[in-house]
Image 1 (cartoon, one colour):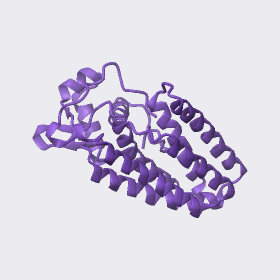
Image 2 (cartoon, rainbow, N blue to C red):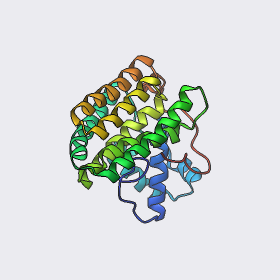
Image 3 (cartoon, one colour):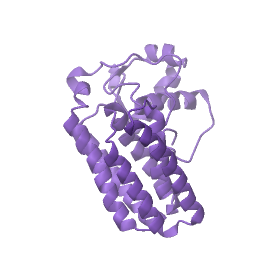
Length: 249
């Protein structure tokens, strides 16, 4: 797995791996819009990689359901929908609640320090957003991921953390596409999760997490933020990136 999701393994930076990571980051951060056709020639010019290298990278992304292989018609960025977001959110909840219970039981004082530090950065950026200041959405979501990952990192299972990272990336794509920030509600839930971690109250943390993730899904559905990416509008969206991807969260 690779950034943005923060999974543990980082393979050697071969040309194929570099192309895969760059494309993956651009899909997850929404720089390559849902439904967009991914012509190999256009990608070759934008990413500076060979056609065979790009085809291999896109095939890998298709296996992660971030890209759709369309047979002889090539590839496109995976579509989005409220129903799919709800399913992705359910998967994230399933994994994160399980990991929280194990992590809260096993975490030591150093773990507590990492959770507090991760929340400090996230809360500082949330205060800026609440004050109406401009903030990099990629940095904001990176801090969000760092906090949620810190909560579960003491779970004792590398496989669980890798699986969670992949699920979180699919969830993150929806947040980036829909530009989700629920203001004081989300910030308060993050503070509550911190309190739960320090008091080792895993059951309350799971309830807070359910409200946190469920509220995000409901917010996106009610906002209509996914409507511009409906299948009838597939292929629209921003141009292919020039000069590399957005920095991954």
